[in-house]
Image 1 (cartoon, rainbow, N blue to C red):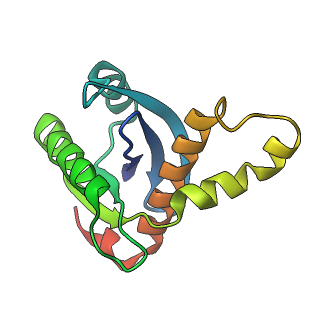
Image 2: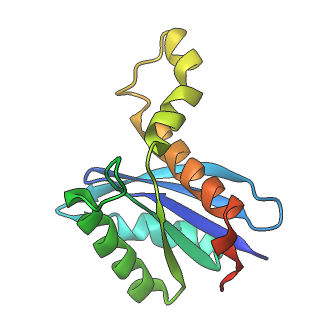
Length: 144
């Protein structure tokens, strides 16, 4: 099937997107709440069961210079937990500017009166789609 999940890890919300290796396209699915450092696993379990992804891609937050930062540790921890829980390949990929690009995609909607806070979940899911689209377009998608 070649279905792939992408994640935009955050300490309060994790954006989730689904993509396809053949088309190279992705779309935001949901934003999953994080409580006490753990994602809403039942919600993630339900998405996994519905879509049956073959690979999981987690955005790795880096500084503008490409160095790891404190948030990188949380994303790596989340990626490790995903791999252990689902026994699927997990790829980490540079997520620099993905949130800004996702917010730009919603700029016209906000100009029409929508509030960023209210749309945070949608923007997080869209950021996951941006991360996944970039990964799908890169050469490192040839793995399992």
